[in-house]
Amino acid sequence: PQQRHAVLLGSLPLDIRIREDADGGHPSVIADPASKVSQAYREIARRTAARLSLQARNKAIAFPNIVIQDT
Image (cartoon, rainbow, N blue to C red):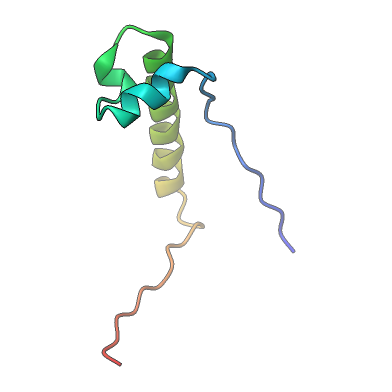
């Protein structure tokens, strides 16, 4: 079987403000855009976008066939 390796795109600190912001309906990136937590979220988003853009160019990675049936 082919092995798959997970790529670490980033990590977030154990910071209570993440939970408090999320529970309050204000993502950390909005609540405090200049914070280290917000910077970490943005870096993870950039890395995710970069990986996805490379994956989209690789035609060897096929999307699954999606079939909709009325049963």
